[in-house]
Image (cartoon, rainbow over all chains, first blue to last red; front, side, top):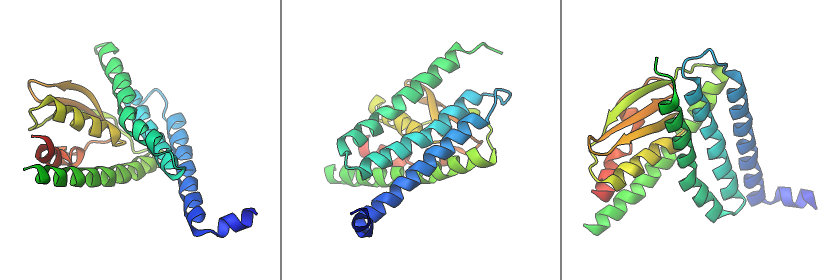
Length: 95
Length: 103
């Protein structure tokens, strides 16, 4: 039964896009763990790299057919990144 | 003109999705090869309405690699964190479309 589904071209394309999403999430995880605290302003670099995971999640939700969830994520994802960076910028010690 | 604004809205979404795709691949590459240099710059916009300034800040944050920290609505200045030093036009390529759509 699984072989019949894989030979269907639409589900083949969907599977390829989901694999691309998984690779993007793995790259984001590597990027977050890679940079240590000695880099200057490393907090922003981590938030930038987490943006990849957001985009992969939106792509995966679109492929899985959850269009409303994808739209809500597309609108709401910048808010928390902005909140974290704003709090970090103004809470940081002035040097 | 109302139809012109709809045209600008469609063009804005096309440019936004293209830029997001490009920036996602760029940042994914940077997380592998380690060419990261976080940097904060101030960008002056031409947009006057708070709605369009908010949409511009949201688009900047939605693009991986750029992140809006603060918005000064009266002086029209955005504070943006960038993963690698770039010029202003590469950070906000969608500003003329927002201007045509909402101003």
